[in-house]
Length: 433
Ligand code: ADP
Ligand code: ZN
Image (cartoon, rainbow, N blue to C red; front, top):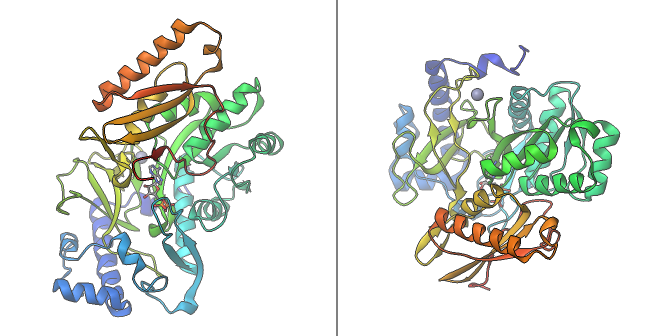
């Protein structure tokens, strides 16, 4: 292993080699699902496309998309491409958006997931000798397990803490000299605030160096806030159960976009309405094909996550292309007064305002009105009403500038809103309750 790389050969394959490898794997996986998965065969036949029609990478566009709905056909085993006896693990999605999807793994799939995470960790500087506190949920959710096996492969000491019990999290950090943490950004904000409330100075009292934050969208402002609160480098970590969990996209030391491991995933960005490819660098929906998964490969899977491809080569030397941080999931978008708004736009504004604490909630009151409930620093509750009114006006105005609709803002004391240990539920939609 060369310093800074887990698998330098694959991570720095030349552009031509990488595309040739992708094409070989694409042809193989398309043939495999056509032969083994009746649902795919039916879909391909209906679209009038045969495995032999895939002669170039662009030919992938001849294939029909796979959507979340396809995962519920003959649920749960309908999309298996191997005999059930070969399957050794099931995970489900967290079910943020409905019935949980069931995703299966063979032994090789588990090994592949670990290999990809190993590349991710090493690329950010984590090596044998590091101590990783894994505060994602161990269980049906992929987040904790996939990270766990990848870290183990690198030789990292893992503290399988799971989420929650913040006092205990901090104790574990102290006791074992935790250097890296893995959790959601919303929980990291909370843990950071508890550490600061205790009067601890992380740089002095803890050994933290890096935080791997993912499972939900967050802004650059949130990254900065967590970095300040915890004295760490924050690396964005993207994945989805359907593609095997975390480690699909991951930031390197440059923290400028997430590398997608293109030997394992074929990336397309399409216009979410038309399904047509967008120009390189243009925003659209991320569509992924798993090139190496055995149990349940997915072809042209519509992630509903919005992003764009960063065309430039990264300074780290890796040839695998990067995507921008996820701008939002199309499921999360809401409309007020006819304007499309993503929760993340509001988060970015809030986390950039001095005086705003770490927790907030968006309440959709009607189609014309939304409320932003936001916790602010305790020092504002000292009876000086002008200061608080000024902050309220600043928040209202900055959100209006960002999303073009004026919100109703409610300021709250820290600790008022529910703390999320896993994925945060930021939007309460009263219009559909
Ligand atoms: P779900 O939340 O759909 O039930 P998962 O638990 O598999 O299922 O979560 C995957 C989704 O979480 C992704 O499609 C994406 O919307 C979101 N996600 C995961 N990691 C990130 C990240 N680093 N940034 C933004 N969004 C993320
Ligand atoms: Zn890089």
